[in-house]
Amino acid sequence: MHAIASGMSGAHEVYLVDGGRPVPRRPGPRPIELIPLPRLVRAAGRIVGLETDTPVALLMEERIRLLIQAVERIRPDAILVDIYPFSKWEVEEEITRMIAVARQLNARVRIVTSLRDIVPMSLHEVARPGLYEAGVLSRLAAFNAILAHGDPSFARVEDYFARAADIPLPVLYTGFVAGTPMRPVKTPEPGSYAVLSCGGSTTSLAFLLNSIEAFRGLRARGALGSMSLCVFPSPDASAGDVAALSAATGDGPFRLCEFSPDFDAWLAGSALSISHCGYNTAVQLLQARVRSVLVLNPDTADQPLRARRLAKLGLATVIEGAAPPVEAIATAIEEAMARPPVEHALDLDGVAATQRILEEMVAGVGPSSHR
Image (cartoon, rainbow, N blue to C red; front, top):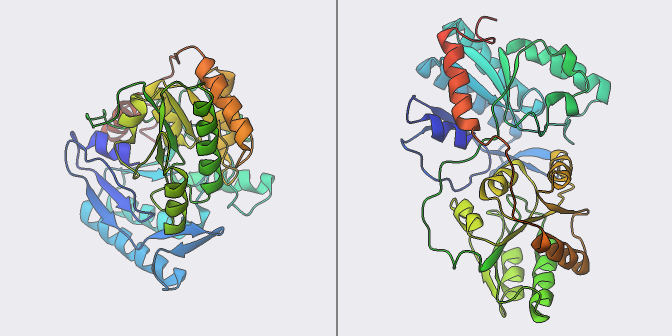
């Protein structure tokens, strides 16, 4: 959502709701006005406040108040909602009340749900499969269109949503949403290093440590030449995890790095990536066209599906399991390095397409403009 907001900010007034886990971001061509809400995060499967003991019910009441206040001030022409109603049912009330107020103020406001390439029922929607699909369809009545931020040759909504034929809205594919072009940053010599990362996952210490040991063993027997490994832990890694990683990378060809909004620049210069397969990571890999080893994060429903599709296209090497053994990671690294250079024709122009579609909807042209 930040990539879309940043990309559109050069042509429009863009407001980004900021009420989840804070992450360092690269500034866009123009400042984006943030709408700060009390931060909610998921911990042990439950929604909780971030660094506060305030009851979640009170935090949600305040979030609703601030969202309504923002809508009354801004009177938006279009609202892009992340993933709901395909997920995020826990915050349904703030979304539906925001939409209701926006429609009262502007009957022509366009309400669009914004999906990633693959959005199966998550682990957090408490509904049996048949009831889940019915729940999504009933909630879509509040929307004008669905934007699927992927290439339809890679994945389509009907691939993961059993009742896609019953969706009463236009489903418009934008291509993958890549971030703004990377700016030059000081990295090692291109091609002289690999990167190891876990995105925003806070439960990946074993995966990172096993990957470091696999890399160390391959280097020791000369399988990777003089290549070094740059390790990027989660921005929310605990002090204990950082200490463990520091100890593991204390000797040898390793560099422990801070989570950075310029990670795509590091990735672009690398010879290999070892990572999970969240949407943003996958798009950055496609953008960089770098060889990759993907270790599936079992805490998510979309990552295994996405990673296996990339592997089927010959664009990645996949290892099953949250923390594969050192030997399995070492084998996967060798397999990935033996692959030819990564080439693909997948559409990565999702920001521009999203802007064009929203402009057409607000202007009253296009298939999703008059509903």
